[in-house]
Length: 460
Image (cartoon, rainbow, N blue to C red; front, top):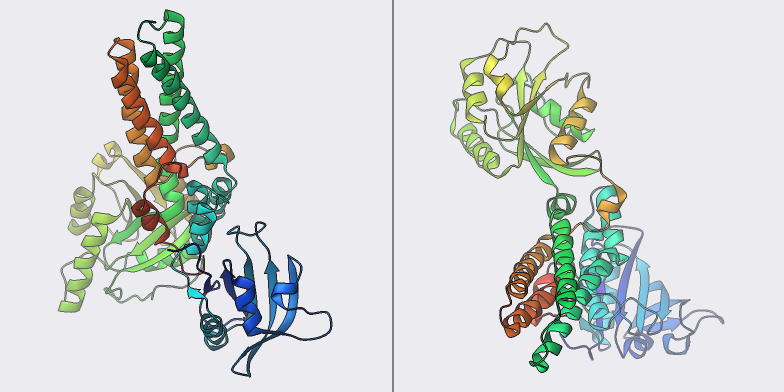
């Protein structure tokens, strides 16, 4: 990536729509836009002559041929997302208009942006830190309001403020230690040593607090996978449709209708839960059903928990008993379906001693679905979801950095307490501070940045 290049990309999703936005950023953004844009009307100006944060009406022209009528936004540095001169062209939606506008800008001298390059420039130009940059991607991919709130809190810098304070405390402690290294004849006084130890213990406690949010952060960002299992015709597909609020899976009284796994995400009490409807577990009748059951088994291995659906209108079968035993160690909710019919199902007494929740529902009428949603939320997220929790939910990269920082900080604390040579204490403190700095991008490598921003969409 070269910051002196002027980059361009379509910033809106490809496909039919009312509008599309083509974004240009870089030193030559206005000069390149001037080559493509012809103002219409007395009040419209060329991009290079227009005041900042104004909208100009005109047309995009290439080789004297009109491509589209557009609205063009002029945004002058540094008051832009990338802190570079920026032009945003709003053209008609659809694959062809946006592509032709993009091709015109490319022909005028811009370079196609790499995935995440606009956000990467915002980071490199000091507009946002690395944790905030990651929040941009989280914001785009949010599937529930809670996930959106968490992303907005991180984008606003709530996590960064806490991380920067932690790093400042580590750097201050390091400065004290290095000062005593420079003056070896002066021992650290007991009071000073105790203050340094207290600051380190406080920092370690804060790291522990952040690390406890890792699981919740992962759930909000990527969702949690739940496999819906049970015998054929127990009502798995009907249950999926109820949880989604619309008909997604084919429902039929014919056993074995579902031959493949179906994945859909639902908002369950603010949490994104990926439900996988699986083929009914039984002896396969043909090769297609055999493959569906094989995929069901693979899904079960990767799911964080299962919804085991039982037909309450029929007696417990040997197959039911086998599956109850087989998945006894899996985090699960047992669902007694078809409560609108006379009950004939009796569960084995040993289930009372196994860690599972029992919910009675009717996937036909929807009875018990709200109680099931509550049970899913309680299984996935213990306790109340509080606003302050959403401010500092960390991701897996943050978790790795904090684990390394905590390890080094603990070594430094123990070494300082045991009067180990201060050079070793300083080395561990520096490692801890660098690891914490990785979270906000104060210590980074090009490989790390490439890894983060390559996951972004082009145009963002």
